[in-house]
Structure formats: structure tokens, C-alpha cells
Length: 208
Length: 124
Image (cartoon, rainbow over all chains, first blue to last red; front, top):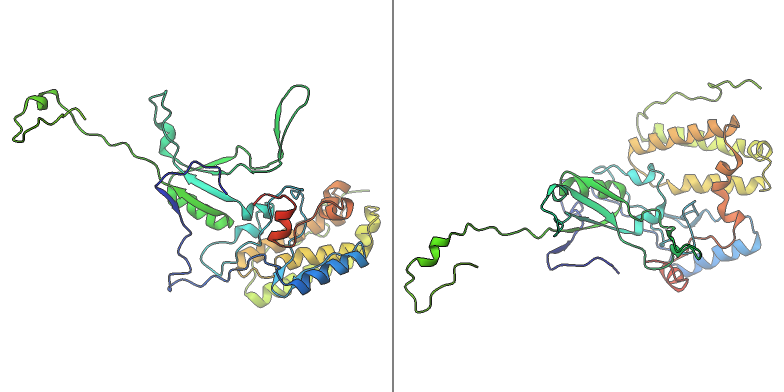
């Protein structure tokens, strides 16, 4: 579920890496422990010996360990996608918490503010994180200060081009989507065109 | 105690091939595995050695399926740095205990699957 205001020009996409035959195939590994027997075994192991750490739920999918960012509200972490050769698997060496893997980033071009004429900020592409729906926000009871436990709250990254942003997201293993900007249509208007002869019945209003 | 900065320092190098990388990873894992009792003694941990070892194993298992050599090399470098910092007692207890958050706080856990997480009222 997304809190972003979506427009009709919203593009959901993943890079078509797997579709191109010339590149090496991706061995995608997702965190899926739907195997009931294995899950039950892991639970039993935990209750038997309190200090036992389950290493792997089953062959092929390593268990995601609790890290410093894990909380009662943190998103369900996903195991990063394994790339063979095409994009560097930065998710494994960045040290970032794995619950970032299950959050979707938005890549967009900020619009010009309606109250200002400057359009400098609209030249760069920006990546930001969605606000988490539950938890992670609280208010100071005395002063009413707003706080957030979401480490990506208010974080945004700037890129020179859309491709750069997508490449970064792919490298880090983020889910992403691109929100295309609404471009302004500009047409040259002249007052004199109002007085041109038009062959039809009704006179065309040329001011629009 | 004098600090010898090169103690346990290892030269950084690129792996020649997958087999070489595998050998280096196993060496790093063995170093960690053997050092587990010393880690417990050094940092006066109340955690049994077996848990330290399983946690080490878990960290290695997490990266088991990584295929790219540069990534594997970087993981080895990070492991070696971590090992040197741990065994030279350059870390403080909190910097080590961040790996054992689940041991300290029972409520902190990663949900097994989507449905469990959903019923717990988690995000996504």
C-alpha cells in the first residue's frame, strides 16, 4: 500500500534484466519460509534451547538474523536478490538493515512550487522512501514534538538522471517505481491571431 | 598493555577465482569459530560459546549465496577487520552485543513469513 499520490503517468517497473538473453540470468532468492514443517521445527528448536540460534530454515534460504534496526514494527525483511554478474550486489556489503529490501522507493522529479518561479529543484531526479503505515511515530507528551523511529524518514537522494537512480536502486536491491513528471505544455500565443480570418461558422477562441 | 596495531592484521587482496574465495571464506570462518571462547572470556559475555558460534555461523550463512567475486572479497575484508577489532579488544561491549539483540530482548524477532508479520501488525 502506498501513501504516494499516484498519477495516471505512474510507471511501475523493474529493469528487464532477466528478459534480455545476452546478460547472465539472475538467481533470485526471496525470503520465503512457507514450509510449515521447517517453520515448526525452528520453533521447537527455539523452545527447547533458549540460546539456540536457528541458522537456516531450509536449504537455499538463509534465515534473516535480527539486526540493530529490527523492531516490533519494522517491515518484514526480504533476502536480497542475488545477481550473477550484471549489477553489483551492494546489499550484502552496504551494512544497511535488510528490512530496506522490502520497502519500495519512489523515483521522481520534484515539481516546481506553485508559489515560486525558480525551477532549479526540478532538474534533478529524486529518490525517497514511503512513510511507514504503522508505528515508528510518536509525540512527546509534554511539548508535542513529533518523533519517528523510521531511519529512512525524510531521507532523499538526488540523481542526475532517471537511469542513475534506477541503477542505484537495482544495485542496492531496492524495489522501485518511477513517477514520470508532468511536463508543462508551452505554446507561443499572439494577440494578433485573434483577428485572423477563420473559415468556419464560429470564431475559434485562440487564447486557450 | 601496549597496542600493536598490526596484530592480527591481514593483507587485503583480490581472490583469483571462486575456489580461492571459498578457501579464504572457510579460513575466516575457522578463525572466528576457534576464537569464540576467547571472545566470551575477553568481553565477559553471559552468553554461552555455542550461541556465539551459531551467531557467527548465521552471519556466514546469510551471505552463502553471494556469487560475485568483488562482493565476496569485500565481505572477507570486512570479516577480517571485524576479527582484528574484536580480538584486539578494540570494541566496546555494546558494539559486540548488537549482534546478540535477540538474546537480550525476547520481543525482538524477525517474522517467519508474511502472514505472521501481518498478524503482528507490522508494516508491509
